[in-house]
Length: 157
Image 1 (spheres, rainbow, N blue to C red):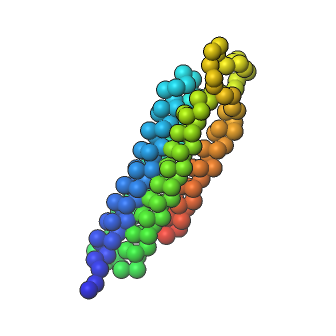
Image 2: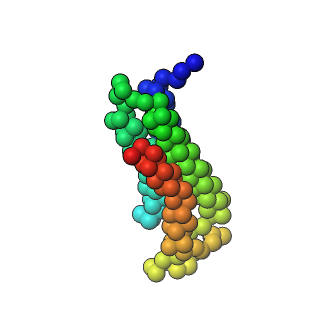
Image 3: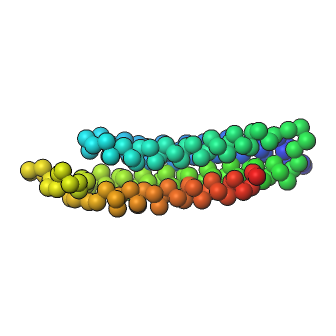
């Protein structure tokens, strides 16, 4: 039984978009909850970072579909399939990590420490945290998806 190269490459496209979108959706749901709790423009940073994960899948899917031709070899089709899997699974893991981190931040009712507002509101049991530390944690969690994108770009290129 031989495999259809066009089908394998198409599955690579679909997996890249679906898995990256799934990871981005999970992270965005928790990031949006975090942004609603904090009435600050800086709280939108996790929402943007989560959305970038979906863009990684779109980039790889576009590159794969642009290389699908009638003369596509089976070896290239497997490369495209694994490229879609690598970026998709990496972004899924990254999205779940970001979601778990933001879920924990929501549960502990954290708030940013800024120069204008150094003390929590009266009657609040919130904990202070540094915005820089918060963003660095999110950057390292998103780097997992970026590593998958780099591997996929290598496989497609």
